[in-house]
Image 1 (tube, rainbow, N blue to C red):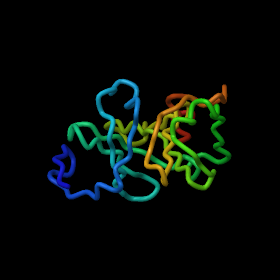
Image 2: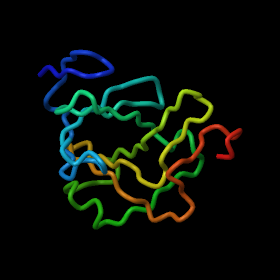
Image 3: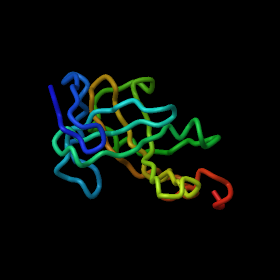
Image 4: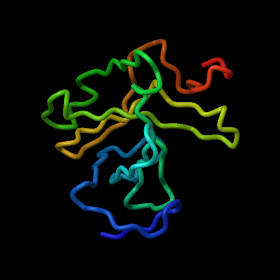
Length: 142
């Protein structure tokens, strides 16, 4: 299947790798199908299949934030289907401003994906100490 994207032009994707976000993402309720595109570790792209303009930079916060452990309510992820913990992928949305040193990651609202069921959802972590804008570089107080 071919899709047109803002950042990558026309690309071929494997329909079997499309991830369903039943509720869309906050602010993007109409985008319900996404594909994960590899980038340089620890970054990924979450590209909308239905709207090529919408793509989000993700990262595996476990690799950048020591001790990251989002507490997620089971009710918040039951829509992702039957699961084993090893089936889950957990990413965080990155904001990349013009000045890279001001890059932030949203630790409060991880994107949880059931890699077997191909279902995803952005959820709110119950950890009170996680910020929406966690600076990745200490010079910004993060």
